Image 1 (cartoon, rainbow, N blue to C red):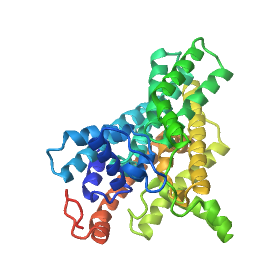
Image 2 (cartoon, rainbow, N blue to C red; image 1 turned 180 degrees about the horizontal axis):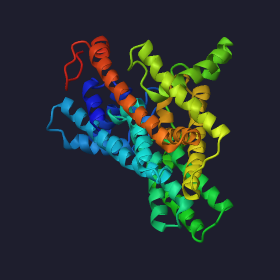
Image 3 (cartoon, rainbow, N blue to C red; image 1 turned 30 degrees about the horizontal axis):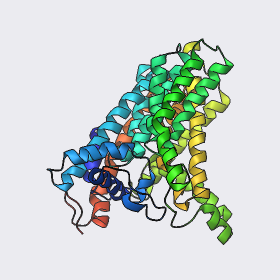
Length: 413
């Protein structure tokens, strides 16, 4: 939380990704007490971020309206800090609970895994400013955690209800957060193939019923008013597929998709100075991935049956979630908007699963003590990376892109 608060302060208001447009949507809800009329070009009354469902923005609008006695700059900071509490604080609680289940027999390894998720610079970025991607990450992680319990614990009406509320809320935070439905579907498939405990059909019906009751109205409304349940602003540069056909450079756009998606998944581009520091960070991530893949391919787990069951199921759910997120992100890149190549914020929703897959792969090659040392060192390295990024933002980026900015103020002009 300390790092999240630090980044919320040192980044000039309105200079984080799309924050001005997010605030335009919040301001409209606060002033008009209704949903804006949407237009594909420009977004209509609420701006181009009005393409998103309204739940996060409505929560922010309540806080924005309650702080009208404050100067505008402080109202923005209140919304940033509320987002930080929701995503940073809430996310830490959920991610820790998830990794305690996945690594319950090794509590310190669970802590190291959870720390790696929350200290990843991209997680810090979307916890420190006004945006719906951070809350989407939180809700998808809650769905992942509840799905893991669904696969291994006795059926529970309360858990089914919570899962339905989570999916419904996710569908009202961001369309891409509909991916929250994937983890429980995998859990239900696991139950259908395996022990089939009495009551799981009831729980599945309760979850889907509540998810539909909470979230469906937004998509029905869009279909009635705009002819499609999924509304989005027109892409200024067209899709990658259109550009590839127009230029004949299919290889270039394929490489762009792979390169930029990978580079933007872990850290905001430009947070580290180009050169040894930047490529050292990506090299560290590359080594972690390579060794983890080697572990999954070449070794079988030597854990006890209970731990293996949780970790394996968690790995399967995490892998399906990651694949689903990437398919959605790449579909947007190739069919909708070429700018989606730098789509790390979408992969953020699968970050707990990614870290679990990496940690599990390493655990198959190394004993737990060595794995703990590796991932404890990773968490320490991420703290260093974040501190260096903060220093670079203050000394270089702010001077370049917000000259004259002072802490707690809007940048000049």
